[in-house]
Amino acid sequence: MKLSQQSQSIIEATIQKAVAKYTCNCEQTIVTDIHLQPDQASGQLTIYNDDDEELANIMIEEWTTYDSDDFLENIEPSLRNILCRMKDAGDFDKVTILKPYSFVLVDEDKETVTELLLVDDDTILVNDELLKGLDKELDDFLKELLEK
Image (cartoon, rainbow, N blue to C red):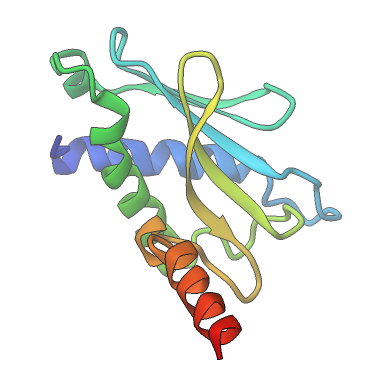
């Protein structure tokens, strides 16, 4: 699902509103995840913290017209791209959440679907594709070492 520029801007503004609650000049807050919970039926995007405290929500009209069962898988790349763009623009630089913390996509039961963005001082995990096949490569390497 390709989101319109307007929907992307609305989502970005909503994420900014959510993280703005953690941009004070106070000491760092311990939050390990910021949860993004989209609802296909209502079109709502709810953002909340580890304590299930709602930080922001917005309605995305485009989501209500999507009929397929692969809704979460289809919006994941769009949400990931928005977060990466925001990270590159420095939108999370003044956030007073103790690092590392993650932006996580969750389903209607608040179960984690995938990690969208890991924010750390040195590491940013932006794509699971980087790790695909790593287990097999390590197993092959170990097997080769043990055979010699």
